Image: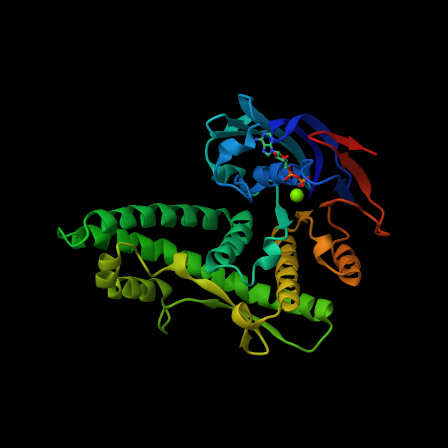
Length: 360
Ligand SMILES: Nc1ncnc2c1ncn2[C@@H]1O[C@H](COP(=O)(O)OP(=O)(O)O)[C@@H](O)[C@H]1O
Ligand SMILES: [Mg+2]
């Protein structure tokens, strides 16, 4: 799939901007703080419905303006879609797809597929488990609406349960109530774990190949899902048992300590835990391999290519890896940001200057 047009109004530092994107490589170049990442952020929002860098959506509205709009056209295999996103000064978001208002984020998910590369994403290996779970969730939500729905239900129930654990700590008998929440958490949680296990198994293969290609050495990358369940067949049963086993502890602590919201991706190089032991260079190579794996899985699952958003990542890589990355991503519509572009790969160039965008 590819984005054909992007229009911003009062979004971040843009008063108005309109660019028509090309099929292959698109380069947004300009000085620091000119608005390059802001533009990628607006695209990401039309896909994931969340900003990659803030949870305070009112920051997205240009200072002094009443509301921000992003209008994006995406050409899919059989149909062109127009996504219209509006954010008001309080940070409330509204979306319409092809002029029809969309009430739930679930209806937007899956229309525009993106994979986002940024210096933060390149730190995936050393970040907290929460970042690696986000990596899994973003990948899975885009390709399976059922996953997105299960995750929403799970998070809602978890929040209710944690509120209960916090409020009623030790004072009243809350076990009957907890039994109900726990059954729900085990059901949705088991689905989430099952899908993550499948995803990581495919990711392990795809990322492993990229890792060998990029690093060019013999170190073997191995990715697996890390959770605290004991052995057995039925995930729901095991999860419920684990949740029940930790109930007394969770009551003491005031929050739920078992479930997919605590799990992680285990990352090993030749059997050694990379989250602890990998050098900076190794971490970056692994993260890049995992992101490229995400791209391949998307393409295989959906049967169409996602749009790749590369924010400032070229500057993080040496020249041979830059060329390799652009070679691997040819065949995809790609939007990259940089201060200067001096690679050989031909590209459509857009000059970003203090909240304005102009094609060269
Ligand atoms: N809501 C907003 N209103 C006006 N300007 C904003 C808003 N949010 C961010 N900015 C401005 O956007 C600029 C940063 O843009 P960014 O896209 O991150 O730059 P870069 O080109 O370096 O990627 C900063 O000057 C910042 O002040
Ligand atoms: Mg930037």
